[in-house]
Image (cartoon, rainbow, N blue to C red; front, side, top):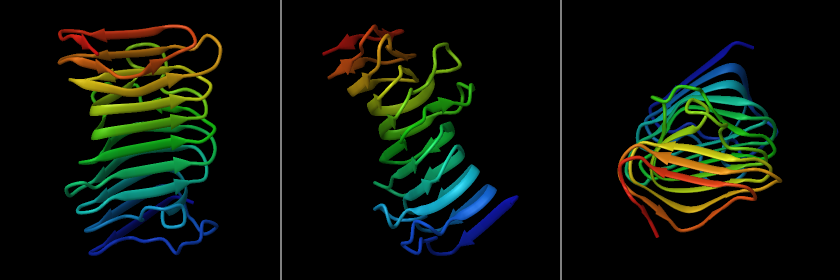
Length: 212
């Protein structure tokens, strides 16, 4: 399959059946309100390689079956969220933004960056959960963020984050032998609540302070 393009003057909603999916190489979804809804049966079920989604005044809720690239995914309107989960393989992040929460879960795979530092996760809060790792070592491999608060959990891998400004590390943890947490921000302060790694925790506030 090639492309699916859906545009709604209202919302794009799921049929509450996880077995029925949008199946295509690329899906481009545009809604005046929301795309999917919260809850496992209400998210929009997909089998895609690449997702573009824009909800002008609502959240974006997607449940993917396997590997996916989030090319441009945007929620609009105050307090709305982007919530993406996949059941297998990796999630590659290009540009994801929400006024409130960005919640990305790769159940058994990794959350990886597009190797372009100019494309970021933007939101008040980001929650990143991976069965393997989150980002990879190196300036272009880290997950690029512009968020106020970060929660990140890598069940069997390291966590690498590059933040543009001030950030609070609410709960950032890596698991698995020899794995690290590495967080760098380019401006502002870094406030540390909880950071855990089996090997190294590397925190760099380039021009600001590291605070408790």
